[in-house]
Amino acid sequence: MKLKSQDNLVLFAVAACAAALEALIVSLWAAGGPGGAFLLGMDRFLILSHAYLFAACAAIYLMGRRIIRPIDAILEGITLYGQGRLTHRIPHSKIQELDELARNLNRMAARLGEVDAMKNDLVANVSHELRSPLSAMESYVKLLLEEEGFSKRARENLRRVDGNLVRLRLMVEELLDAAQIESKTLKLETHTLDLCRLLRDVVSLYEPLAAEHGLRFELLPCEKGLTLFADPAKVRQVLGNLLDNAVKYNRPGGSIAISAKPEGSAMSISVRDSGGGIPAHLLDSIFERFRRLPPTPGTAKVRGAGLGLAISRGLAHAMGGTVRVRSEEGVGSTFELILPAGGEP
Image (cartoon, rainbow, N blue to C red; front, side, top):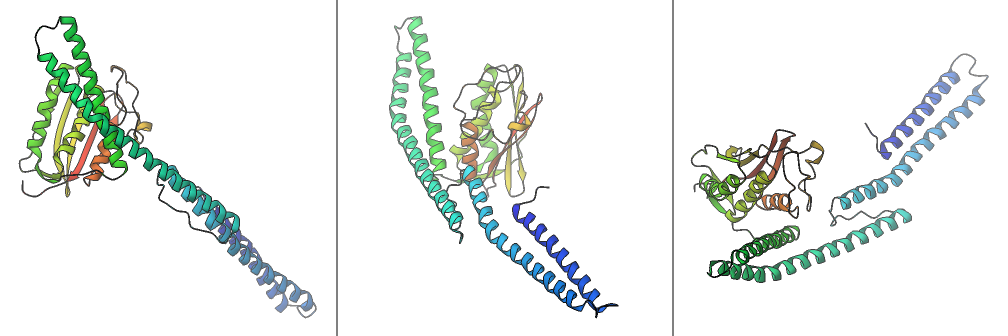
């Protein structure tokens, strides 16, 4: 077990004071014991010396605490800043040097917060401005694909353009969602949802994709009457991200199973795949932005910005829930979306 600097100071002060107190008791005993009258002057000197030593130990402890407390506060602040909690402020200290350090760190955090806010605004504005023209271009390409008279090669090129436009639009929408989650400007339209119907709708959209990759897709029996209190579009987006990953990171001929069950006052929706699994040391980092897993044996290299899981957990948190994961290498992974239960649908 590691001890903090303050704990070490306490142990040192207690040990020193205990030694001084022990010597003081011995001196008092000697002064009152046999032959004490002959050594009374010396014993008084020893008693006073040990008493002063005891007082000095207590003073060292109090002064040390005065120094170490602000140091611990500074270390805590640095840790929180490293976690991205830039609104935290380190308390001021009565020690000039430590107070100056705390003020400088607070100014640094405030400036980083301003830069982070500017970055979020830039990403949100650029994403918003790009989304409309991309959607228009995508619509025009789809109209061209419906026209007759194009050669086979031209039609294939149009399909490639259409696919890249869709990929680019989805990436822009992910960036916009990430910026809104970060700036806490995400707008939700929450109401009670029929969970079983929602799962059937989502599965019907992803069954063709799973079949295209040679995967078995199974919706496990859903208990009638289960409800959610959430934003339906955001729930579909989160489940879409989880199912998309289950397809991309699966093995050829593998399987995907989706199920739902009550969990206290919440509902748990599980997406289980039979892919290569996630190494244990990466489980805590897969929900970070721009984090992509390396391909596992039997799976192809996965394309994407690495925002899907970060956005999924952010959306779940915004709706009062979370996303968690269990995984075993060589067996597969299970992602669970936990959301508040609703009332009557």
